[in-house]
Structures are given as structure tokens and as C-alpha cells.
Length: 294
Image 1 (cartoon, helix red, strand yellow):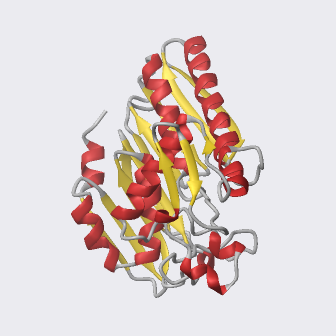
Image 2: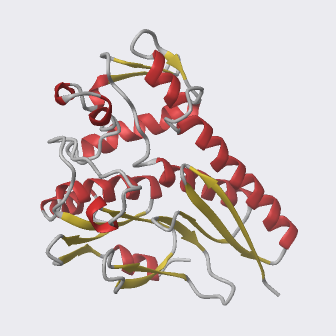
Image 3: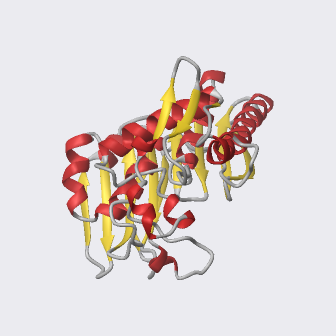
């Protein structure tokens, strides 16, 4: 008889949940605890709200000297730079600078403004005022790392999500079916699409205007410095939940014009956009690929 275990933790200002299915409940619990521990460890490295985190130390010290960081932080910064280039600058972890500086900040945003030294595992920002913020990629990376830990341990069936906006799944649920997810319209709540999720990461980004809350910071277009208002929702399916999260943020910024870029970069992926007039577009066949994988 299949057992199901659920573990949750609060990290990166959101709730992470892991659902595991298998024959050995004690084994599943041990694997879950290890994966949860990794998520919490990454929170301590990647948050910009702790002065002793890797990102906190970079933001405070790196204008003056290189900062040695954990290998996981370094690899994620490398990935973030690649994704910024891949999205033509629409995804940018230095976008937090807009909130820290005056209008002159326009001249210093961009991933070329921090230096990575792989030999010494150090990071140094190139100019005063540069601030790094991994909020647009951290959840996906945490899910990716947690999923790897589970798979390396021998877990065959799991569904992981961070705040319901980022998810990754492999194997099947307690009934032997692929894990199913739904994407809802951010304002009406109407279901836009449903599909099975297997070996793909899903990320859904929603604009500040759609959330209608004062507790969420608006997504900033790093190319203009202005809040994103033309797109309500962007959803992306990619094999990597890290890449999916970066691309959903980028498509929120780029809008419909970004779909062609996405398809060129990731023919294996799928994306959904809803604009501020309620029009929607889908591109790619990632969901079909998910349906056929276990």
C-alpha cells in the first residue's frame, strides 16, 4: 500500500510544500527532512534581508572587496547571468537597484555590473549602489535542489511547490496518476488551463496590478525602470524550475513580443500570457511533453 507524506516549511517569504508517495513512509520522511533542510539552508544564503547571508554580504561589502560565497550561491549567480543574456535583459537580478537608488540608478542596473571569479568563488560588484536580489529565481532554484536531493535518495514520486507559484513534479500521485495542476486567471479566478506535470518545472508570475494588494512589490522592467502594467500573468513550463521562474518573470516584462524569443530559446517549453485587456496567448508544446513523462 502506497504511503503519502507531506512536509512544509516557510522560507524565502513563502510556504514550501513537499508531497511524497512511496512504499516506505519512514524513508520518505527522512528524504523529505533532508530536502526541507536544503531549502532552509538556501534561504540563509540567498535572502537579501539578512546582512549575514551571501547576498546580504555582497550588497554590503562587495563594492569595496570581493566576497567569498557558498558554491551554491556562486552557481546560481552564474545561472542568473546566463538567463539575463538569454532573455535580452528582461530578467535581471540587479533590478533591486531601482528601489535603492534615485533616478540615476538607470545607468547602473545590469548583470555586467557584478564580477564572478570561479577560481576563488568570490563575487564583487563593479560600482557603488549595485544591489543583488534573487527573489525572481530563488524559489525555482530551491525546488530544483530539493528535487535533486529526493531523486538522489531514491524517491520516485514527488510534487514540490513554493507558494503555489513555482512547482516541480516527477512520478505519480497516490492514485498512480501523473500530478495535475491548474492555472487560474489572476483576477476572475477562472481556470485558464490544466495539465499533468512530470519532470518539468512550472512558474507563474502575476503583476502587481492583478494581485490588488499593497503587500506585494511590483515587477520592475529592468529595461525601463517602470513597473510592469501591460501583462497580468505569465506562466512557463521548462525542464528546470530555475529557468522557468526566470522566464516567467521575463515574459511578464516582455509581453507578447517575448513569446517568439522564448520559443527560439526553448522549443521544448510552453508559455501562457494574459495581458491587461484579458487577451491570452499560448505557445509551445511543453504540456504535451509533460503528459507523456513519468
